[in-house]
Length: 150
Image 1 (tube, rainbow, N blue to C red):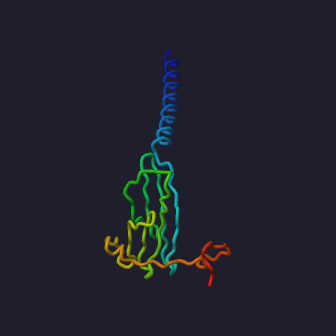
Image 2: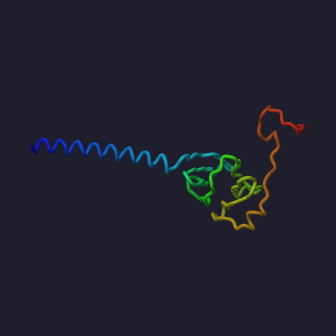
Image 3: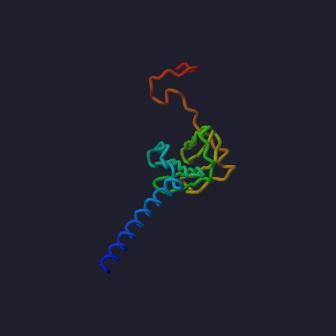
């Protein structure tokens, strides 16, 4: 009788563990991180620094992270995921090559000064100038409508 009880206990434990593992996996799939990916890697012009822009989509929100030389320097507030609009997230260097800028949809959200290793104020961020790129900067033979190469 004891052997039968041990077998039943072992069987019930196995079933409960299996059901629990399945439920955990389904919960993670439903409510966990849906998508986390590096969307841009940008080296500094002097090749001394590497910045990564990471986009993470959870079930209810969207966040952006910036890592500089492997250290996280920024985490955005929550955005509501919306697949009907392009976020056009990007990171870029200012003309002095000392400030990293994060933009969404052409609007600046964050700036970081490399030398001082601190977040820029809104006033500092909005005063930064960026280099206007020309098609030849991209080193391609693609035809650019509306642009006549020099």
